[in-house]
Length: 71
Image (cartoon, rainbow, N blue to C red; front, side, top):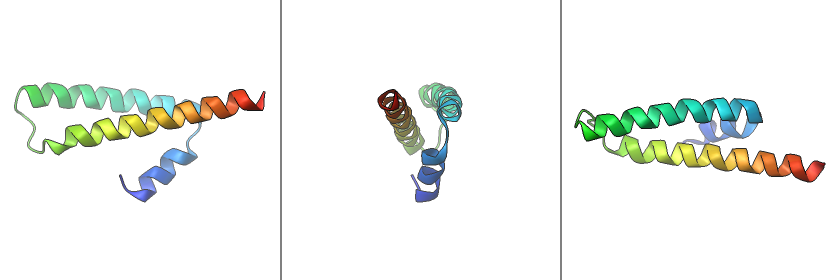
């Protein structure tokens, strides 16, 4: 993932990250279906989508932890 996209993810709020997670999850589901139907030309898209989901989930966990530590 490029640095500018990582910076964008780092600057998102918790609610924005959760919205992004939903959007990426739906895109991932579509990629899995397309892969199973052999409609996907670039099979590396699946791995990249998994990586994006993992990064977003990690940032959500970090922000929730930081929020709970402030209390």
